Every structure is written in structure tokens, then in C-alpha cells.
Length: 428
Ligand SMILES: [Zn+2]
Ligand SMILES: [Zn+2]
Image (tube, rainbow, N blue to C red):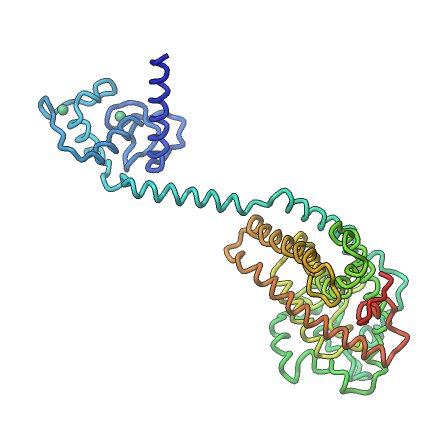
């Protein structure tokens, strides 16, 4: 019994020592067994700069740490073998140095502790950036809801009022409608494209910008300006219906009071719509590729919107697109927009706040885990910055829709009016 206990003790000591020493050695991934340069025993790797066995590795380490003067009891010429290596420490140590083992590579206790703490910290950090099972679940639910309610190919978008593309297709090169005609550069059909989006962006501020004929206050009256309005109203209504379905398919959303559901939808619908349109935005051609129909910024102009909305929308789509978000990330940010506790009229503020926090943390963890690019730590703050932009645009959108409604009272659909109206009676 006592023998066993002693054995166990010894084994434990050896284990500890090995873990410690492994940090100073380098394993050799070689099937072929090699010989220890000191004693000829089997060597599995390089230790302190030389190929040695585990025994000589430990010996060298202890010898350095003890720093006692070693004396050969014989003639300072002992030949060190696997069997006699314990008989003369002085000659064994001399052999160690002779084959190139280096004293300065032995770590001090302090260095060993520091190194161990670094390794532990790294382990803990890696553990933190694991998605929890709850977060995995959140992402799965969002992805599933998103996929079942976002018609990427716009195949269900039918029966809409046609978009008046006469000025696009027939008179692209005709000066018939100078104020509403699209510059060929941005609106021509496939094949011609705006080569450099930054060039267009830069042009925004100049008088020759792609927006130069976007300002509805200029030009020849309102008639042609609103040519795309009926179609855009139908497209928007279609998007809103899907966004309502998306929201209602989420458990956390359904568990809220009807009043709060309405408040959240009123606040987020336009934002989510922009996020969804971003998924089909082609920043090379400046176009939204919505299945069978492709839209350009001038379609938004022809719907009657003004520069104060169009310009930020254009910039937003380029900025968000540049982040190259994955489908999961798009799904999470839609939900983050939806669960914004500070929308007007919200009652269950803290409940929604908790959901929002949870989503933000899930997104951050997702980015930490799944992204590999060195600048990934910048991605989360960049996404958050986009939310600020979305807010501003949503306010401007509501304002402009109400103005358009004044001019064309029967074109905007009741559902769009529900979203932008201030009162909360609503049949979502
Ligand atoms: Zn050896
Ligand atoms: Zn000796």
C-alpha cells in the first residue's frame, strides 16, 4: 500500500515537471526515432536548442536552476550513455553544453508563471468568444424567420402597378424629358455600369453629380417626377408585409403587448426595409437587383423623394455593402432594429432593452467567432454606426411620405400610411 502511494506521488511530480518543461521544448513530428545527443536514449524533440531525451532535458534544466559547481569524480572524460548518465553530473552537463544546449533558453520560475498565465488568459479568451447554445438558438431562429419572409428573388412580388420605364428604355438618349431622364451612366440597362462608386459618391457634392437632376424642386413640374410612385408604393407595401411577417415569426416579438408590437414596427419597418434592400444592392452597378426588376437611384427620385433622403440612402447602401455582411449578420441587425426600446410609445421598455442587448452581444460574439479578417474588431462599431444613419433616414422618410401623400393622396397605400402615421391605431 505504502509503495503504491509513493509511486502515485512520483508520477504526479513527473507530470507537473513535464507540463512545465514542455513549454520550453519543441516536439519533432517525425515517425523515425532519433537519438539523444547527450546519452543516446530515444529523443522526441529539441530542448534548449538540441535534440535530447526527456531525461537529459530535465537534467539540464535542473542543473541550470541549481547552479551548483559540478565535479567529476573520475577524469572529466566520462562517456555518457543511457545507462550510466546518472553516475557523473559534471560530464553529463559538459556534454549538454557540447551539443549546443543553451542556458539562456531555460525559463526562470517567473517566466514560467508568466507564460502559464498568458496561456490561461488565451484559453479563457477563446472560451469567451464561443457562441453560447442560447446564442446559437437566437441566430437559428432569426435566420429561419428571415429566410422564410425575405423573398430574395422577389418572385412573390406580382400584381403591382407598372413602373413607368418609358423614359428609361425608349428615350435614354432622347432629350424629351430632360429633368427626369436618367444619366446613361447609372440607369442604362445591363452592360453599362458606373465603374467607380466612389467617383459617383464624390460627385454627390458637385453640381454635375448623379443627383444633379434629382431635386424635385427643380425641373418641369411634378407630373414626371412621380411616374414611379405607384410602383414604388406597391414595392414598399410588399416589403412591409414581409417585414411584419418576419417580426411576428419571432417569439420575443409575439410575447410583447399588441401596443408595443405596433410601436416597434412603426419605428423599425423602414430601417429593416433598407437593410433588406442592401442585401440585393450591387455597389458596382449602383443598382438594386430585385429578381425580375432592377432598380436604380433614379427610380427613387421618380417616386417623388428628395435629395435630403436620396443622398443618405445612396451613401448608406455603399457603406453597409462594404462591410460584406453575412446572411446571419443581416438577420441579427434586422432584429436589433426591431427591438429598439426607445421607439415612441413603447411600454415594456426594459423587456425590449434586454432583448436588444442580447442581440447585440450575439452579433458581437458571432463576429468574434466567425470572422477571421484582422480588422474584424472594427466591424461591430461600424454596424452600430449604421443604426444612427438608419434612424435619421427613417425620420426623413416619414416626413417625405407625408408630403407626397399631400400631393398624391390616393397613391400611397394605407399600410405605408400606417407605418409613418404618429397615432397607433393600426391593423398590423
Ligand atoms: Zn539523454
Ligand atoms: Zn565525469
